[in-house]
Length: 276
Image (tube, rainbow, N blue to C red; front, side, top):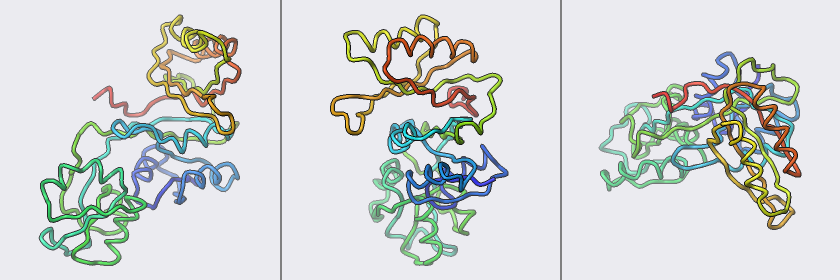
């Protein structure tokens, strides 16, 4: 099975895919659009994409592109993100002067850089790509921030583990497939939906009441501007559900008060952070 991810081998998406589809063959892609294009074209069977980080917020590139394609969420994984400082084998902490990583990863390690003022943070396109670069160049003044999977992938040495500022950093990853290729989930616990409201007073209230009336917990709602339609917005919502019957009923009523409703998936969540 071919599974597309954004970024290099050894990225956090790669790590997530090993949990969601351990038998999958990873197909790295440079950008969000390339991941979804690979799935849309049939070049891969599935994709694992990050959709939200508990500290940095939603990954809107994927949300915006996801709505334009016929994909379905099959499963969700909530994964703890641990940032590790690593370098080429034999490099010592004392010689390191520059640290490469993705800007989001660097931003989540501000305390580490404050404690080590001799280190300069350098933005790189990808966490795993940064680890690969420092491992292959072997320069003793270079280090990178990335996952343990990246260290294993490229033979880097971990100089310091868990350098992130806050321990409660989790990322939600979706396992997605093309519409029609996902088996029906027997006991879904979560529903993701996108909808466009009618242009009338109280429209959002009426939409949200379809969930509240059934005692369904809305765990996320976010609005996004619609391309080519100034001042019109798409709403994305996640709702906990006891089963498919309640999801069907809520979607039926939601369609009465919205001009567009698109179900993104009903699925189960693996390793939810709320259980820790």
